Image (cartoon, rainbow, N blue to C red):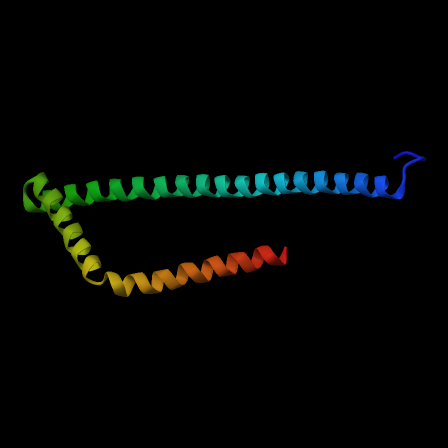
Length: 120
């Protein structure tokens, strides 16, 4: 700052520095939030892929085992597919009973997460 600056000029310089600092802080907070979201999604994706692969291999093994018991390997695949069809029908039939508690659980988690962010 100048030694010859008027109080008004000094005020404008401080306001300019404050606004630049505020903008920089907002950028850094946005970068941090983005990094949190992306890293969380990446971890969840890896876990999801591991679970899907495990379930797929388990289903193939189950189908082959049931097929061996029934005499033809493809019978086991039909049996496993039929089991999933029954499960899908039951989930479809009771979708409202499943959706409401799941909906409420998601809202509670989001509100809990938001309150933790406010405490920081």
